[in-house]
Length: 487
Image (cartoon, rainbow, N blue to C red; front, side):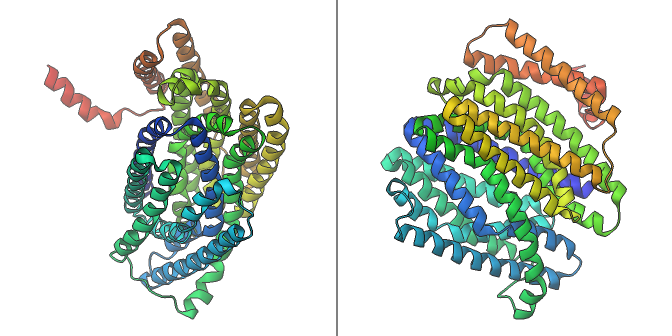
């Protein structure tokens, strides 16, 4: 449990740093480039995210799982790393060739061509960076992987904003994006040599570990691709049916909606390698305990950030993106509801994937993707970005329902129904009280964001500490020091 907690905290710290960087990057970017350019940026990034996900072949998850299973033998770890790097290079070269062929055949629309040329150079390096980061996760040195990712994001953010400001616009942003992966993949590989030796793989290593790595990665790719399309298909469909301005509005809604699941995301990234280790040792009860703890803290964090953003959606969009983006308020609120359920699901899915249920989870995600495409195709032409939000939100809820059904067939225990009901009622009380309080007091957007979040946090802590969901024991020594100092 101590090792798991350390991993979660390392990943959580990285997620918080990433969110803070994003919080600084986005409002500056939307003021440096036009709304139409921001819509272009969102659609290109959505498409390229799908390309890079395909090129990675699920090797990030496969590497961290395989490394975690062989940490007792440094020689095997080295062989796994070498094999994963070899596969990532092969995948990257193939993906780069396919994109170049698409450009040569004029499959890519002319308006996207300059940006695709820049991003194509980053494909190979995104693959290598993923293997380096996955290796650190498997070695339970998640803090090192997160530091590398934070530095990469800083290079991308600072470089992108600078180039956009001096006149290169979206092309400059993507140039910095590609450069960040080039620099940090090379630097990360150098840092990794201090933790594990690796080199060019022998044929014996590839034949021993290659098939298992590629197979697990392939299943992860199916689910990862389905999930990525689930996040990005709506953006592409809004661009197709509407225009760049509507795409920018939808991007302004989905970006903060996805931020609220950063705690479940941190738990998800830590659970896979730790669950794989516990499953190999037959410690099912500890896995059950981890699931219940993960669900509790996921619900708490999703309630705090989700309710806060739901209630303050309009002032947040006004202050963060600007008055031109207030039209995305209802869409953001719809997405938050779906994101809440999907965030809970993210805690349970890695447990299934690490214990032989990976195909089932990927099938559920794929089914939700099909539902998402169908709903978005039907709703976007008629209802615009609100229709996109409804389609995506319903798909998120479908993933939650599917994994709950899978949970009932798995060897793992459900969280107690009475425990879950009490937790849900407690969070509902907070949501109702906070919503009522904000509705009663009329403040300007900036003043709302300064006054209501601290009050909401105090109300949330008071309710959940009283209900026993947030322990006070870790804070007691510090409270004692403060009390003694004040007295």
